[in-house]
Length: 365
Image (cartoon, rainbow, N blue to C red; front, side, top):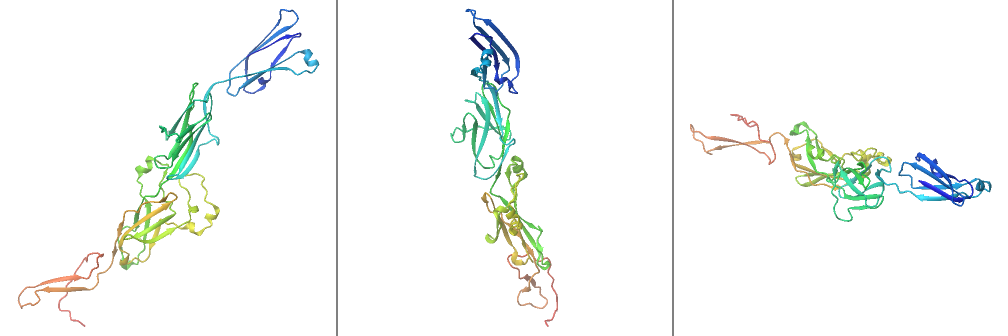
């Protein structure tokens, strides 16, 4: 930077007020004082060499001499604008990536803020889980101005994940910076299980626990860990042979959001006894033959009701009822053969008899 002052009758002292800034480092300074042609005035040239810095937007040159200082006159000043071009820098206002916990179908707005010069025309590139995102041409999907770029998405399994962005201008390209963790809670897809899994005996007065559990397989979960597939249900409907058997609910505020760090359940919810209810499990007490049937369940979370599960049959073992005997032919001749048929009065849902025993010459009492 050159600072030139002339037509003054005394030597001029030139200084720069900006050199006190911490980032302003002078690499070299040079000053020349020459007498002008009239022989009466002087021309002073002060040259400062320094490295450009993005924070340096302007410099001011001040000039004075002894006469001006004696009269306490205002120093001469000239200011120039400095345009320092630099590659973009992606900003994270909170110093870390944001966490979004959304339900399936919820619209989300992600923002990539950056600082660059020039910022106009800077190209922003988005990434999800480390892979580049092809932005659709629809004008509402993203928007760019001189300071930020907005990406609009709809929460779904396909859009859950870790989002990052990178910005490029004519000077260079920024690093890829993680901006947002998007967790998506889907409508639950469930399966029903029994505990114990084997049939129980009516004579044992046994209890059976029905469990409604997410049926996502490990491949689904590993494909996108940000899609929430836990058993945090707000309500579960239980069906027997297609008819509603029972519905178990709990308040929505009782739910602890899975996969999200530092998510706090409200104090009011902690004191609510209904928060201790687990709608994903019900117990059938003292199971009898009337409990035999096809059971299914349907779960609801913050995203809404999922589909009804595939039905599973629960069997109950019980002792046979009164047996009867028939023989053929109806009239039997001495010395001839005949056929005896044993029959047990079994209902439609009952286990086959394991053993039949015929007893001869038993007199009725």
